[in-house]
Image (tube, rainbow, N blue to C red; front, side, top):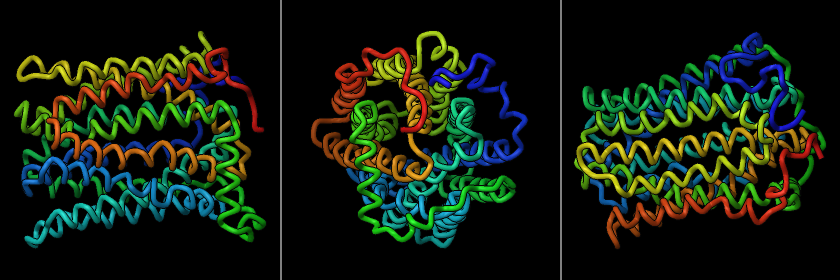
Length: 423
């Protein structure tokens, strides 16, 4: 099957075969609940730092970096470890660990001992567990739904993740305003418990981890994943494009909330609504990703997707009042771009890779493309403190808009669709 999906409607968000797949519905439901909860912490924790702990621009950038630093620190070996373990169990342990880590924030606040150091520790711990969950989840999906339904599975999971980003930020902003950021984080902690329970209820048998893999040296395992990714011209181009986009996205993420609070003077409720409105773009992309890929080809849809992100150049133009709509419009374009791009390129990667290498392939890609996020966040905090918040947003937006040049310099510029099958 090509990257565009089958003509019977596979890849659609609400229709398709997987609606009748009990175990996929459990994974899908658990992920949706935890994604909604995660939107609360994504907004609440930086707001705690800015409003309650009076954090500086660089400190907020460092906090953003702590949430993704684990991809850089343990991203590569995580893939080899996941390939040696049952992936569903890795996901359950990661969910329970994230619940406990996040639950410590409202507990510390109630005891009057919450500080920036704990926020750094919690966000880094959650980041470590997220590395393992994400690598295991992307490696688990092909065996759960089968290669013929990869595009549909990714479209559904990505689509509801985007829907959660519509409902989540507005709910988060309201919760923070009503009960405070620290207690709002408890909602996220409970959502991870719900996800763990859903995954535990999955009955499908999972292919056992390879005995031979467990007996090989970790360095050899990691090296095999690196060679697979960097030895393939299309995977190299995808890695370079995503890493470039994420580097500048990290710069923007470090300063965007500080900008909205201290330059635009937007209250938490309005900030939540802005991010929610922006995420509608991702929902729209999930709905049309498969039809677009069928019409123009999966490779072309990937290229079109990344260049749609040029609309993020509207973000630095944001002003008070009606000018806040520019922020929402810029992030709408960015969200649309990311989802259309990711559904197609992730589905291609999952079909291309042999099952025994899935964990290492996904971990290598995550190491490269997510490992730059903490670098970007630290750079964003430093640049924002040095040249100001709005110029930093301009730098970040320009970098995101140009990320797709790597695809144009690769064989992908000549392809309509991606090659099929493992190899």
